[in-house]
Amino acid sequence: MEVLRPQLITIDGRNYRKNPIQEKIYQHEEDDEDFYQDPMEYADEPCDAYEVEQTPQGFRSTVSAPNLLYKHIVGKRGDTRKKIEMETKTSISIPKPGQDGEIVITGQHRNGVISARTRIDVLLDTFRRKQPFTHFLAFFLNETEVQEGFLKFQEEVLEKCCMDRGVDSSIFQNPKKLHLTIGMLVLLSEQEIQQTCEMLQRCKEEFINDISGGKPLEVEMAGIEYMNDDPGMVDVLYAKVHMKDGSNRLQELVDRVLERFQASGLIVKEWNSVKLHATVMNTLFRKDPNAEGRYNLYTADGKYIFKERESFDGRNILKLFENFYFGSLKLNSIHISQRFTVDSFGNYASCGQIDFS
Image (tube, rainbow, N blue to C red):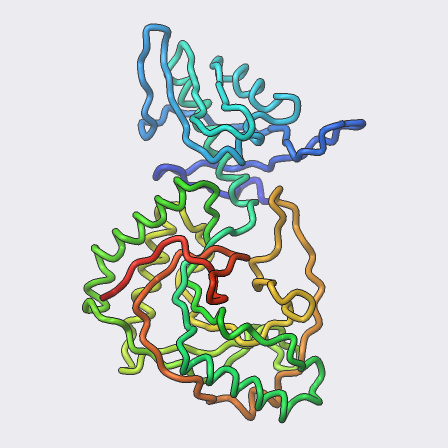
């Protein structure tokens, strides 16, 4: 990271510089839990965005956070909490592991409480970004016509291109799981799932109804494309999805949903626009039928997983099936789908949804 161009983290509408967090190694540690020391330097400043309550003993502020993240505020042997308490002259109360509740910051001085709150929010944001994605916003593309079209595509590819390097039945998507992803989410509690449902409902009321006209979006799934820049070494092949009437309404709708969720902090900003695609072949499926693309890269404690994959030669597939027609369908719902979990129909389990009509 460049010292003069540090990463910025936006919390409650304000920007903070983020300096590296280094992990201290303790020898002969009995506890294998992944706690972290906090050697961050902060540019503390009063922040009116935080709600600070004055009490007879001084000042008080509370932080709501999933209990999964508490350990990162505590740190190894409590070192992170002690360091924040000492440098901000505050006391920080954190619920015990496995218990829900609020982190409570108290102190004699308002600026000290705000400083501690800022540091805790930066830590929470940092370690939330290291959590594996748990859910995603998506349209389901598993209507009968499209599933049948996909199975026909699979059959013809295996018939005509089975001799091409790396092409076999193991790398095709499960037709019941065909979907169109809008954005990936890290939801670590029932409360956060409920917040996501409420945000989706607000999107519907504020702009989705206007774009959709209160009706399903009629789309076609047709044509294929690949993710990387070498058609001879493909890892992901996808089908394109577009509006039947040739309009840009689907793209406008998903981009505005993405923008709204990024602004709220529920989705980390990586892209300014949604790439509309439905994965039909993925080399990660070769060894793990339940793999889920590039989003399967971190463990629950934020450690990177290297996924070895064998690409396939997609040149003949792209030539023979460039304009393959999978079918048409009506998009009427956006789902909050849970990764690695399926419903009774074999589709991703939905934790909530909005309907256009």
